[in-house]
Length: 265
Image (cartoon, rainbow, N blue to C red; front, side, top):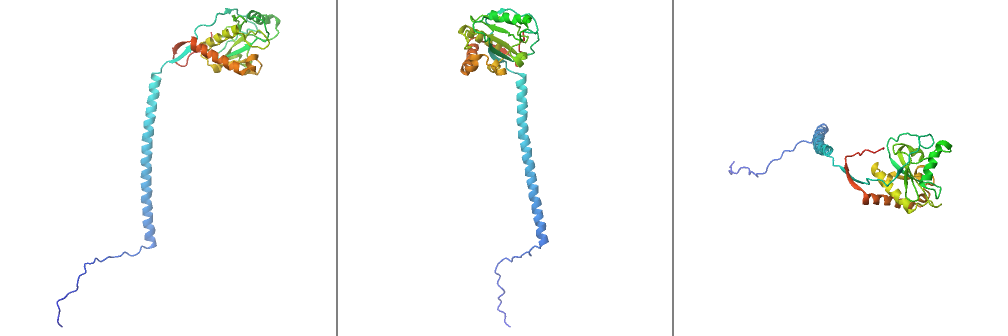
């Protein structure tokens, strides 16, 4: 047979080999391996996020601690205005007795309680003498640290370091002020009012008190005292504004480190 010399033509096509389909067991094995790899990646990512969070939080915490330390080491002095001098007053201390001046100490002054005498036309001296007379009459238990008269005169009956019998369950931590009244309305006249504003402004500075610490007898027991300033809430609010304005106008700036001691003299 004659040969033509022609061989088989190479097409240049690449032969592909095909893997056999995985068995079910092999598929499950590879699936588990893939899941393990994903879990490891998630675990590493979680660890990285936790490390970053701790680093950031730790830095902030250190800055906060450093700031607190510096603040504690260099606390600026607090600045406040106080009225240095009280209104003129006459010291007529009551005799120590069980009915008007028990002689018990106030641990700390936390407030000022405003009262009215409820007996129109009487003077500061008359009310002071009434308190003194209770040691003999035993009529009741009553007194006040200060009494303000119709002419603005001011009498101190009890030292501010002792309790008075005026404000019920607030006797042990407040200063009491009785105000004389000209008529049944219970409204203080201008002279009484101005002395009261000055006295309260001075006491606030002396004992480091705010306007929230200035209250009425009514605020302690619900009693209609001081009458006009219970029945006219706007007048009571204006009184506090007047005290604050007096401090702002007449007070002087003092520097002190907090907390400031509360005087109990």
